[in-house]
Amino acid sequence: MTRKLLFILVLSLVFNLKSKAQNKTIIPSDVIPYQVAVERSIYKGKDALALKIPGQAKDDVTLAILKDIDFHNGVIEATISGQPLENSGETARGFVGIAFRAALNSSKMEVFYLRPTNGRANDQIRRNHSSQYISIPGYPWEKLRKETPEKYEAYVDIMSAEWTKIKIVVKDETAKLYVNGASQPTLIVNDLKQGKDIRGSIGLWIGPGTLGHFTDIKVTKED
Image (cartoon, rainbow, N blue to C red):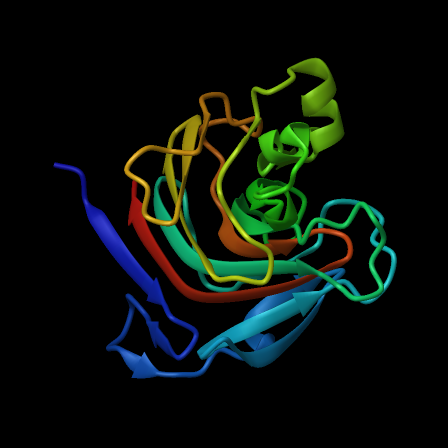
C-alpha cells in the first residue's frame, strides 16, 4: 500500500513530521532566496511572503526555496498572487508560480507558473499563454514555445493582483496543474524534463518585473 505523508506549511504554522506540531511564523530566514528579495507581508487579509527581484536577474532561477522538504511524488497546494511592479516594462505579466523537486542549490527544478495579466487580455494569443511549464536547466519558455508550440502552456481565467489557488499533482514523469478548484487540470506535462527520479524541495517562484505573494502552502508527499 502506498504510504502518504502529509506536510502542511501555512506560513503561520509549521507541522514537522519529525516532531509534534509547533507554532512558528515563517520568516525570510526559513527560505533560501535566489535572486529575489523576501519579506513578510499582510496581503488581502492573509499572512504571506512577498517576493520581488531587486535587480536584473541573469536567468529563470528567481525563487525562494523552502528548507527541510524532500519531495518526489505527491500534491502541492498554494494560494498565490502576482502583479507587475509599477516600474516594470510592457512585457511584465506578473509571473508567479511554484517550483517543485527543486535542488537546494537551485541547479535543477520543475516549474509551473501563471501570467496573471494574460488571463483576461483582449488578445487571444496572450490568453493562450496564461499558464506555463518550464524546467531548469535547459528548458526555458522560449525554447519550449519555439520547438513545441502550445504543448507546455494553456489558457486559464486568472487576474492580476488577486489570490489564485493552485494545485500541482506530481507522479514520476507527469505533473498536472489545477487552478482555482477546477476538477480538470489546466495544464498537463507528461514528460518532465529533469526525469522521473529527481527529488527536491518546493520553491516560491516569480519572474521579471513581478511582485508576488504566497500563502497557504500544503504539501502531501506520496513516494
